[in-house]
Image (cartoon, rainbow, N blue to C red):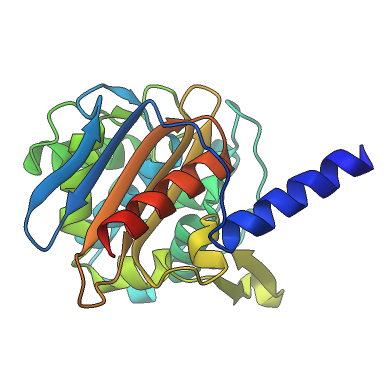
Length: 266
């Protein structure tokens, strides 16, 4: 077991240094050039698949659009927010007021599912059910015609989309400075209830400062596999974004994304 852990550590270190072994191609992916508005590569990009926590980009967009007072907003993690599907946990305190800013950061940086659920009932006079309806309404507004949301976290396998639809979402949220800044933060210490809690970005490309990100979000469930949306900030070269769905592992999605970014930014 010790040898296996050591081998995994060495492999991860090599990947972070840009020296990756062969990786499995995701079931579906899309590589997009934002500078020239064209698709560079795609595979099964119109295939509808569960998207897991990639959902949270739409949750953030919908919350910020319909809550005009988000900087002075609080919500609580209620018993109804408990994850009965995957039994994930949260380090955030329950049944106490938490600033919406803290919830957004916990959701986008460390993909906290309870934060996503709490945000879905944080807007005055909008129920959790109505919030999900608004998420689906926004999807149709963006012409994401093959996208459906069942919850705000992505835990439900009924949260589905395509790589093509998700790229349409990226085109919108990349212009939101708030979402961009939070989703691309490597780590942050939050203090709900005055207790410091450190949250690290679930995307290792961001966490270890491999790229300066503009939009970043990971996702994983057993049904969805390992998913990633990543758009680095432009550096004067091509502005390339990558969406990969149903990678076999976290390392595979990492190596695949880095490979495509390096390929088109030479």
